[in-house]
Image (cartoon, rainbow, N blue to C red; front, side, top):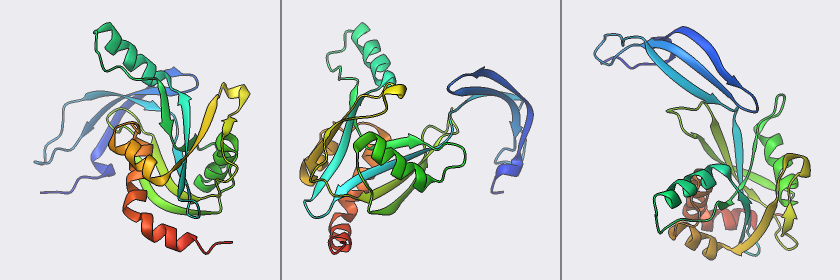
Length: 216
């Protein structure tokens, strides 16, 4: 059976359905089938917002994790749908998250990590460890997220941060590692970037703590 790749897709037509802060493009396409045939002409919409970077801030000296809390429209819309259906398990649209931002033209992922850490949490990143990247929702979006775990000092972390011109109102929360791990286990960390990054830290906690504790 042939291994399929990028060259096995034929774009018949591409049109922009919406262009604003984000872009939605509509594609007419055909692609090869595993059995060697070709699909009929398919119509697919793709939500295109660029690519993102996420950073889980960890203090190996105090064994603290630094998380953010902020309002998210997607979570609000979902919870409002549940309320209309009389669901009893509705949750707050203010989510616990990691530091994150969109890669702007001319920026590297590391540039974004440092910029967003300062803007969203007032933190300086001392060392970054790559966790990996993932597709956020490949069935309908081209966005990928590059994840890092970053060494920080959390002694003075906290407070309200974010850029006023972007409407950001971000509460910085410092919590012990074991409490952050419990948040994941209890479902209070319920967005993909935070879940993946926290799972990585739980798998690598002892090693990363030893690796970073001798940093000045």
